[in-house]
Image (cartoon, rainbow, N blue to C red):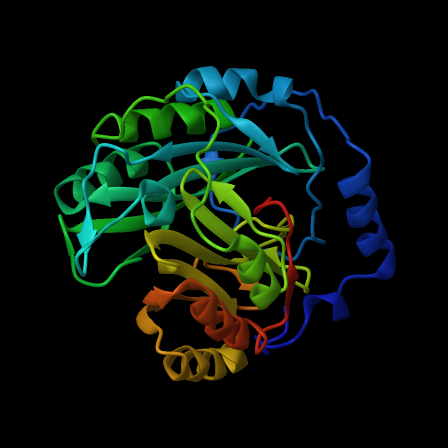
Amino acid sequence: MADDPQRNTRSVLPASRRRVLTAAALAPVLTGVPATAGAVSAGRTQHAPVEPVMTRLADWADVGRALGRPGDMKRFMYHTALPRRDLTVFSHGVRIDPALALGTHVSFVRYADRSTLLMGDVVVTERELQGFVDVLQSHGIMQTAIHKHLLAHEPDVWWLHVHAHGNDPVAVARGLRAAFAHTGTPPAEPVTAPPPVRLDTAAIDAAMGVKGYPDGRIYKCTYVRRETIVDGHLILPPGLGATTSVNFQPLGGGRAALSGDLVMTAKEVQPVLVELRRGGVELVEVHHHNLTDEPRLFFVHYWAVGDAVRLAEALRRAVDTTNVVPMSGGAG
């Protein structure tokens, strides 16, 4: 890889590889081969980038059983949500809905070389943090970020990005399950129809330039980077660890609490921060999701309370300083 972290990785991926990736997104490819090796870091290598392949929900049955939680498919990803419904968290007087900022989730992706990548974002209390990390490390699961999504809040909660790459996703799922057992993460609940989101979602969509989607009481708008993102030698599928997310929690009277993160290259960081502050949005944290991504990506978490549509307009101005496109229907 070149030293310039700003360059678009499309410049080093042959057109044939980009066509293969596009085809994979449209035509499912099933590996059907069980994993055999332990989890290891993807790391930087001299190998040609490896594309993800499409799988079916049935291909992940063993992983689901090992994790002890039902999952679903989001494009290339076998995705499992573990919201911290057990926690009652307040930030600046607002009770945080789990779908706004307390949504643990883990995703598995199969690759053309038959390896599997795990990535996820986990919510833990400060008391749970060190023990959770110890169990992850004993199972070969890496930590790539320990950070905050919220400003002053009670109880004290941390967010942890997890990462593993290898040929035995079932072993990784067992390691995750053992780590989650050291937390108060509650069991899964039956899926029910979400209540109506009490916001002017049409006006929010118009301001954000993307069709959002409900997640329980929360309304979400997402964008994905235009570039091909490579982590180590793995091409990350659109939506995995490289999305901008804008989440609206209704507060009544057209007002909302906003929380989420914007994905940026280094040259985009300052323009985004300036636009957020111009719009009255509070900055929480700037951090990474990956250790070896190209182009190098940064993420800013933010917080705001006010008129939902006006805040959407402010967020849109910040989003427009970055190289993203709308992702309709949710992060993939």
